[in-house]
Length: 248
Image 1 (spheres, rainbow, N blue to C red):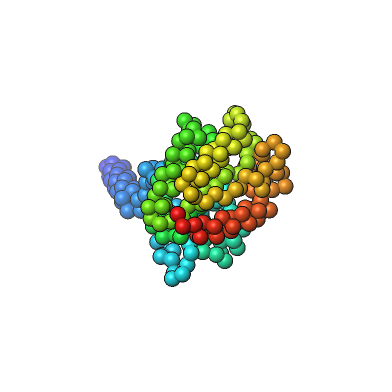
Image 2 (cartoon, rainbow, N blue to C red):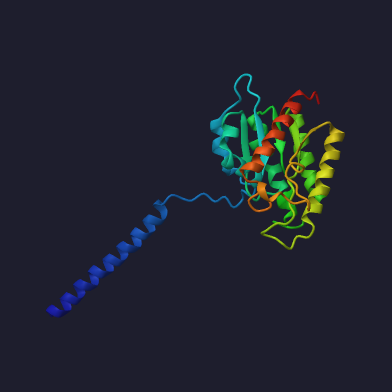
């Protein structure tokens, strides 16, 4: 009899413990903070959202300039933070982005910051085949749309002749990358000339004899090193001064 009572006691205790574990598990599941799902944020608007809110409006007399692009822009501030820290320049680069993503970000990361000018560096990741189904025409369409948005909001536009790239190390199957960048640059210059926009030439100071980047100025044939960025800074300063004087 005692044996049966002991077994019954053990059964009741174990059943209660099991039920408590299930209850605790359910409680933890519902008490745990819900992780926000950013699956719909294809353009990564979340990356600079808080930073933009903290930045606020430009101060009186501030000639704010936004740098919009992908990894070339994002890494620029990392390689030479002083260039941005000592000037009213805002880095809004996101590594890996293609031109449609820049277009989606344009209102939040450019227009809403109320800059005097914007530098738009777009096209390389499109050409690199990061997503495929991209042509120079589609890249230029995005650049045109961003330019039109900027001008509507009285923001001076600075378009860029893209940096030279002979070959993309992460996608060596892309044929004639150099030729495609040269063709895109020509289309950008033609559009800028037609619309009286300023162009900053990042191609000529960095190019080697095979239309790639000079070895002493790059980390991987695509991204500049500090020396490369220093050359870019020189032509950028000239372009910004020109753009801010431009009446168009």
